[in-house]
Length: 298
Image (tube, rainbow, N blue to C red):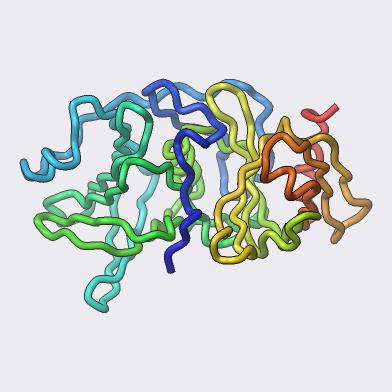
C-alpha cells in the first residue's frame, strides 16, 4: 500500500541539508544500545567514491558529475527483498552507494558486492523528496529492528531490466542499519525506542506500535520523528517535532504510564496537537527518554 506521507519535502525538513559531505556515525555500537549521545558534533565524513560501472544509458539518465556519492561498506551484508511478476526475490549485497544531487535530494542507491552478480542493483527515487527510512518493527532494548522499507513503490534496475516494486532492506547488523538511516537523512540518530502508542490532545490517537527516533542535524538542531499510522488516510505521514518546541514534560510516575509533552504552538501541527502522550514499550526506554529531555528542557 502506498503511503503519501512516507517522505518529506526537502525544503520542509527541519534538519539542514546544506553541505555535500555525507556522514557516518558510531553512535550505536551494539544491537543492545538504547542510550543517546550528548555530543553536538557529527563523526568524520566518509570519502566520496566512484560508482560501479553500468550501461551508458543508465549513467546518462541517473548520474551526473555534480552528484555526491557516498559508499557505505557493510560490516556484514544486507538482504534486498522485492516481488516481481508474482515471485519473491531476495538478493544479498555487501555495500551501498548512496547518490544525492547537489541540493541534497536523494537520487538512488547502487548496491554491489553480491556473490555471482555482475552488475549492480539500482534503486531509484524521484529526486524531489526526502524519503524517510521506515523501520518495520518497534525496537526493544535487546532486540534491534533491522528491516527498513520506503512504503511507496520505486523504480529498480537490474542489468537492463527496469521495473517498479516495493523494496525492503534487512541488515545483518544493527550498526549498519543505523548508518544507513543517518546517511540518507544527513543526521545523527541520537535516540530510538519502540512505543506502544502516542496520543495528542487535539488529534487523538497518533500511532500504535511504532518507533520514536531523535535525529540531530549538522546545525545541532534535534527533532522527534514517528510515523502517524493511526490518523486518517490523508494524514498518515511522518511527524517531526523539533525538540526546542517542547515547552515542558511530565515523565510519568511509574512503569506503564506515558510521558506527556507540552508543545509550543510554533506551527500548525503543534497548534493542533497541543500535547503529546507517549507510551513506551519498555520502561528503560521511558527513563532514558526523560533523561534525554531533562538535559535539554530547563
